[in-house]
Length: 148
Image 1 (cartoon, helix red, strand yellow):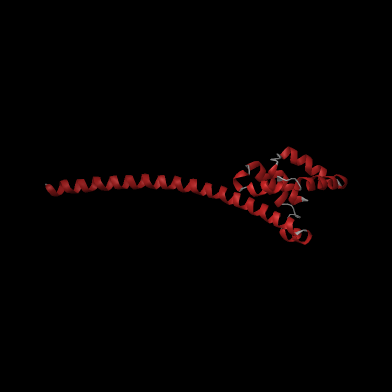
Image 2 (image 1 turned 120 degrees about the vertical axis):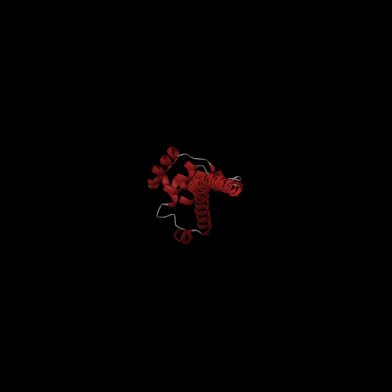
């Protein structure tokens, strides 16, 4: 159920407030069965599979990423091996979600590293220009001294 809930959250762009409401309902056993029936209906919609194929890492907002990280991937039951014992299809979807989130996290880290790199490159370029200028001044000074 968690896997399909996570996919539903991504596809419908559910925010944290909506997710909290759904999660509270999920804690109630009677409501959990109803929620599972609702999710099965969503999975059977003709747009479900095409939406999954069209969903990419760039479609995830930072809020969705936080919800996925904190409320699904961090959940003790959201583990590939555990889900695989129950349902192979759900396990593959869980693996896909985990990979999607990891890729997004890596890209975010890479952007941060790239910004730092550009900042340091600019700093080094300035230092190089200053050193080059200082060296030219010294060379010109030496030439003048040799000409005397």
